[in-house]
Amino acid sequence: MPSNRVSRLFHYGSLAVGLGFGALGEATKRWSGLGTLDSQSSSTSVFLTRANVDRIVTKLTRMRGAALKLGQMLSIQDSKSMSPEIAEVLQRVQNSANYVPISQVEKTVNRELGPNWRAEFASFNDAPFAAASIGQVHEARLGKNVQEQVGFDKVAVKVQYPGVANSIDSDLNNLQSLLVMSKLLPRGMYLDNSIRVARRELHWECDYQREADAMTKFGTLLADDPVFVVPRLVSDLSSKMVLTAEFMDGAHLKHAEGYSQEIRDYIGTHIMRLCLQELFDFEFMQTDPNWANFLYNEHTGKIALLDFGASRSFDKSFLDKYLCVLKAAMDGDREACRHWSKELGFLTGYEADVMTQAHVDSVLEIGKPFRATGIYDFGNQDVSSNVRSAIPVMLRHRLTPPPEETYSLHRKLSGAFLLCIKLRARVPCQDLFKGITSKYTFSDGAQLVY
Picture 1 (cartoon, rainbow, N blue to C red):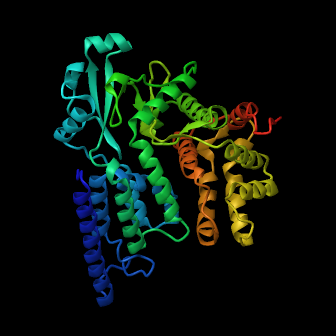
Picture 2: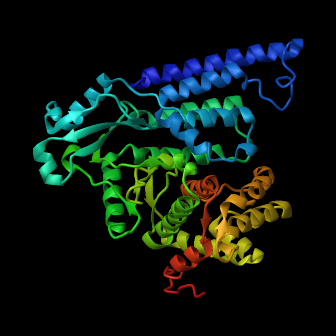
Picture 3: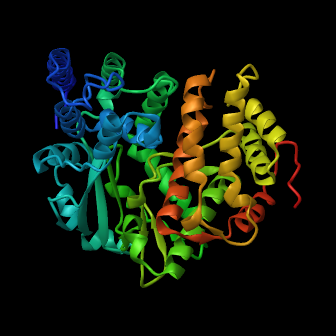
């Protein structure tokens, strides 16, 4: 992986040149009538040829860092709001997993923990078992002295990719130029805002000391939880670029479709519960919905939580208004949905009627699981398709970008909804919502009464 700014700039420059030549070739084919019927469509960008799609995926997965993070952020956008080609790029980038060689890992860990760091481990597997946008993870066993101090021996050691933290700003600037030049994204997605949010979150996630604090905080918040468990930190073997924590056993939830209906209901119910608790009880949320961040242990029935780099709190005033929006959606109150959406910043009050209606319709759809009494069956839902139908209208007619807090918040909530849909889980959503939000105290001391 390129680790300094010059080499990373070269890779972005070579990608731009490659895309340019690919687009020129495609334009020539269309002009001469040699392109395929699909490629000759005026709605298809000359930049989005099969060869250019492959170029983008290959380059972004090798660059990782900001490139992969922005791809992952944009990939939660509904695929029907963008071209099939860019949707494919984002999905392939999201699923990528390129590792850096052990020589680069050694340099980072030597600098962070000292040249004798291997003496603290009984074993350290040089081959990583997981990779993400910021770093990769190695399995290890602690040496006897450290093991006695922390009370466990098997650990996961996350090592940050070299050069990622120092290249965030330049990488995002280069990516923004590429996306604007190639017109890959539809109008109305407010790329500047996505870039700004990605910049802030990347700086957060590159600070492993911040992540260690968030992990410890979640460990305290969930210490008595009957379902969720949090890895314990090995602070003496952690730093700003290395994070060592207890190894958690279990299967990724992306493999949970094959479980029995009872287990799928159990997982879906508690994932939804956790989302609501994070918002309105803890007021502190882990906002990365990647299903690999949740491990289900069939033997204990526990769900382990991983990766706390994107954890964040929200201002009380934002939570007050956001709860009012959700409560209005649960009640099916269109006027209250419009009012609180304006108060929150989703609407300006000057939108065309078609935009206001589409926005309120989508909010009411999101509230549908909480409006249903008893059990809500995510395996027989139409929320996702109904929300999809409103997206093109909102992209064309919105006058303001969504509140910045909602980029990460909706990434997590949409992840929870999609997981429940994938599992075809049956969840008592209204009971969960009322039970958790009835304990929430607004800034003025008021509480909801059901």
